[in-house]
Length: 266
Image (cartoon, rainbow, N blue to C red):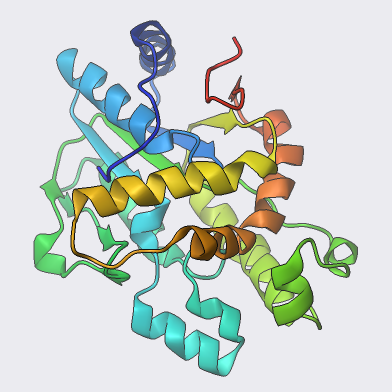
């Protein structure tokens, strides 16, 4: 589990979620939320609580499905320069995620992909953890369950990045098409979806900066992003994040609203 700057979730909340998961016989539980909402922290606490009940748990992050640096460089050259940046739809190996979730659901032995964010590369296959006979899969990610926008919504840029670096809309249309075409197959493998809903997109840059500091603190001496780079980085995610804020509360089985300090409002 990657380092996180998010506070711990209450034991009561975690126990209640796990009670519902067990009662509904959920095999794949999705945790969606914008950057910094505490998805990985919640997944880790749920995994620990489930393990204490004797359940065998695997945790998979959408981030671990990122296309490798060199693959994204090829996309940047052949499609659009902004595709060099990991994270937006179209920069994940969706077929790998589908295959891993299918194997986990079947109880087969499987190696879980892992991505090194500071190195910006997927770890070698030999370093992927091997699991088998899993009872519960926790699948978390910033846009898990997100839906594509109508083409008409793509005409106007949502931020300076789109205005200055995607003036003709080619990048955002390519990402939106990937989200519509490829990702529903991955989302269909989720039995139940939880959405961690921040008060708005405006808090994301600060939360992502805290996350970046935690990553760098866990690996001193390795290069990471500075605050200005983080501010630019999150603009790659803004369009889909705003779409998720509009739609996921109506699509998720459970929504937990958060305040600006990431305290659950429930």
